[in-house]
Structures are given as structure tokens and as C-alpha cells.
Length: 405
Ligand SMILES: *Cc1c(COP(=O)(O)O)cnc(C)c1O
Image (cartoon, rainbow, N blue to C red; front, side):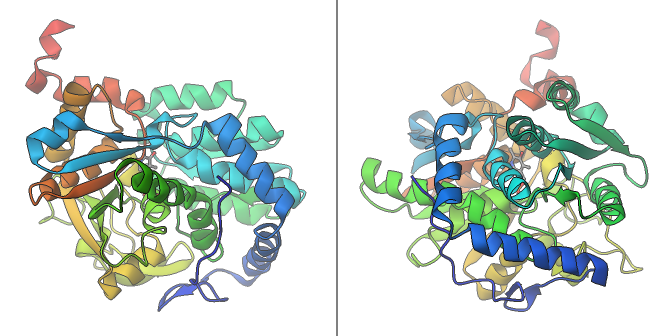
């Protein structure tokens, strides 16, 4: 399938209603304008589009299937379909936008792509795209995440990327974003900052969404073919919001389809710093170059956030999600660590699919929604191989694994 990048929003300044835009130093604004201009050209260029479509098919393995999870469906009472982004090359949806961004960098004559990473999934996906297309690659990663996501760090090294630790604050995703931005400002001409989600200044929320919209475009067609119509509900986890925007984008005009974004409630929603449920608990504000909902501390600084899923612990969210929340088009929920881990084991043991802990948040919410019957489509954004050591070490006992090892 060749993707269509045909969406009414954002406007030319990058606004989704009052959210989005570009709040950055003037020297960086010129660079963003160049990226925007280059992207506007290639998004209509048949050669670029067919190059990307060919990589999606032959390199990533698209279209990813949708799978009717019958055992889960029987238990919870709705037909639950999984969009299998976990089967993509590199194991998650992120390869979809990394290939787009790396191709764009090539077209713009850049030598290097740089980025931040949380769980390491964006770093691995970008390092993969860089290796394929012959670009250098620097990945910024929080020190805490480097320890937690060791296999992904090794993968990036094998792929030839440099992994640069962010050592301040909580040493997780937000600090990695800070470090990557700082490095980018030092040399924005020979590098392209490949943002890892639908966040950052314009044009990134638009561009990353467009590259990810292949998920929804495929899934919409697959549901019609395999289920015979559109689902009643579409569910996706929301960190920065790229896999969710990717699957939602094809259903936004289908008002009979309810859309659900799932944020991490972490340990508890009642204590700031113990969750990362930006849309449920945050307020509109500006950081990392764009306006959206964000979690702030008393000084107005980005709040420290927490989730068991490294890919979800970000104190803001893509501006289109903020817009869709205010509009009431998408319902946003929160699932805590324990519910996510329960869903992780449930999908593993009932369907033989080990999901990423991020995606497990969506599974948990889908099972709640399924109690009303109908048909639920869940975006299974990634596979859980990266999480198995962490899960067994911290939760193995509860699932009677610890004593078997
Ligand atoms: C990074 C990641 C996420 C969160 O990122 P979004 O931009 O919100 O999609 C979710 N699932 C997996 C598997 C990831 O790697």
C-alpha cells in the first residue's frame, strides 16, 4: 500500500487548534523552515513515495497483519483484533517514521541523523534506518534507561550508532531530549534531528504522524476485509503519541468509531512524579518547542514523570492529541503499572504474543472496553523481547517464574 499523506491539519504554522506551533530560537527556526519546505516537496514526490512504500513492503514487512485474538475475545466478550506492529522489522512501529525521516535527511544532503530514545526502540529503529541508508547516527539516552534496556543499547552499537548517555535529572527520556536538542543546536546544518514521536516543533508532529498513518490506512482496509466493517473502538497507548496518531488518523472522520488513547498511570495518579498521564492530569503549556498539555511542577518546569514503560514516561504529548482531547474526539484513559504487567502476562499466556510493556497498557484498556461487547481494534505497537529480563526480575515472583529460573 502506498501511503496517502492527505490530512487537513495542522495549518501552515503547524497548529492543531491552539496546540503545536514552533517555540524555538530564531537560528533553529530557519532550520525547521528548511525541513518543512523539504518535507512539503517530498510528500508529493511520486519517487519518494514509491521508495518509502517499497521499503515498507520489502524491508519492514508491511502490511503488518491484523489478528483476531480469540481467547482474549472469549474471555472479555468483544471481538478483539490486534494490529501487529510488533511484527515489523526491529519490533515496533517506530521504524515507519525512522525510514521516512532518514530518507528525508538523505534528500536534504545531511550526513548524520541524531535523536533521543527512551526504551531504546526509537534509537534502534533510527540506527537501523541510518545503517541501511548510509548515514551516521548519534543516539542520546538517559543513563537509567541505558541500564534498563541493555539489549537495545547493544543493538545500536552493533548497527554502528554512537550511544551518548544523558546524565542529569532523572536520567530518562526527558533528559535525553534536552541533551539531543543541545547537540543539534551546535550543528544543525550537517545533522537532522529525527524526533521519535509526534512531538517537537512544526513540522515534526505532522511529519511523524504522516509516516505513521500507514498503520491506520492498512488497518481500516483490513478490518473491512476480515471483520466486514469498521471496529466500534480503536485503542492505542500514548507516550508521545505516534503509534496512536498513526492508527487514529484513518478513523478520525468515522464518528461511529470511538477512539481511546491510553496513558501510563505509573504507581499512582494521585502523586505528581509517580505517573506520566499528561492528558488526564496536565495543563496546557509550552516545552521542547511546542504547545500542548504538559505536566509541570510548581516552578512551571517539566514535572519528573514515571512509568514502568520507558517509552511512555514523557511529561508532554503530541499537540494533535491535545486538540483531539479538547474536541472530545478521543477518550484518554490511564492504566497503572500493575494493570499493564497483568495484561503483559495475559496476552503472553492466552495468545502466545509477548507484547511491549508500552503496548500492554493498550491491551489492558481494550479488555476493559471489551466488556461492552462489539469489536475492539488494538494497536499492538511493539513486541516485548526488550522487556523480558526487567519483567522477570521485578514481577517474576508474582507469576511464579522466579522460582523456575
Ligand atoms: C516508543 C514506543 C511507544 C510510545 O511512543 P508513541 O510515540 O506514543 O507511540 C509505544 N510502544 C512502543 C512499543 C514503543 O516502542
